[in-house]
Amino acid sequence: MLLDYLKPGKDNAVSLDYLANVSGMNKRTVREEISRINTSGEEIICTERNGTGYYIAATIEEAQSYRNYNRSYWMSGIEKDKGILRCMERKFSGQMSLDDCLAETFTSA
Image 1 (cartoon, rainbow, N blue to C red):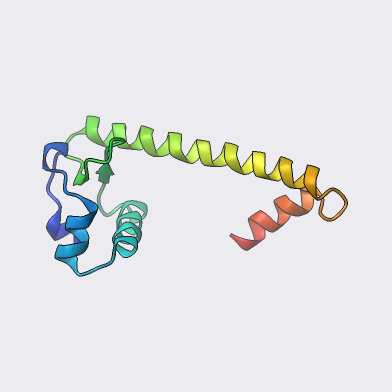
Image 2 (image 1 turned 180 degrees about the vertical axis):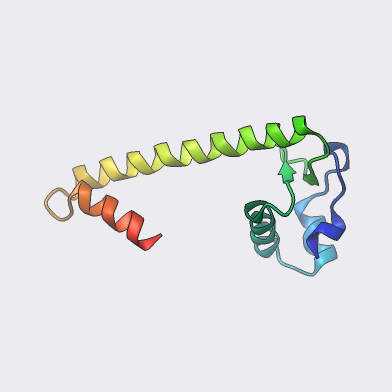
């Protein structure tokens, strides 16, 4: 299990390469497993903005810092999606309406 290779505290962060090597998973699968663990609420696996590696949150401050980072990433994704929708409406006017794009977005997710 991936959690066996992670330790509490950002000072104990380990790289994605390390996690892939010791777990026998490829990097994509490691990221998916980290996402699954975080989404399930099983544990809080953090990563720093500077890419120093992954670790288990040891303090409320580490958990909140990661939550803030994750929320800003999520919010930038929403803004990017809005821009893509605006561009689709402009470029493909008449082929698909903005409402159709929105409906397709939420039914295909």
